[in-house]
Image (cartoon, rainbow, N blue to C red; front, side, top):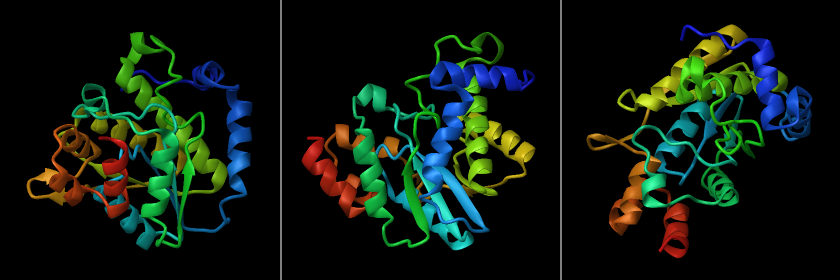
Length: 238
């Protein structure tokens, strides 16, 4: 990416979506008490729309390689990759439900803490239309700013590692991953990328679940998500 987002642009962005840098720092302080300070912590961000066996897979990898894993579940409108389909299927789980399902499905991993993403981490609701798109295009602008906020949060919490899933065939996911790599290098954060869990020839994804749900393919859903999510979807999304 040829265009570099400066400190001033970043702080202007924070003013546009919330209470500026002071608001971000205040939010970071509010969650610091929920995280036991220790070396070897890592972080990641989930859409979890809905939570799948793929999310579980990468959480287990991070859990084994970290003293503690902080998972932020997006509280704004969930972002999808280029293959995402929550817009066309009309299936979008409420933020609190996505958060609670993620907590339930990871409750047995004692060193995993699941938190809401707050107003700053990857919220599509607040991204100003047209902001920076003349320089970067909307997707790269999202990606770079998301990476900057994520690394700011990691620095504040003393987190030195991040995990992400890779799916090279998903163009938008690759844009976000490349931007995150760039920002993590600047902040001395080690980004560990794991190939996503597969089911046959396909990567397990929330998009697959939403498509199966829209087409009422109950058995396919059961192969893709933990039991708690399957039960929730049966009760809430029919």
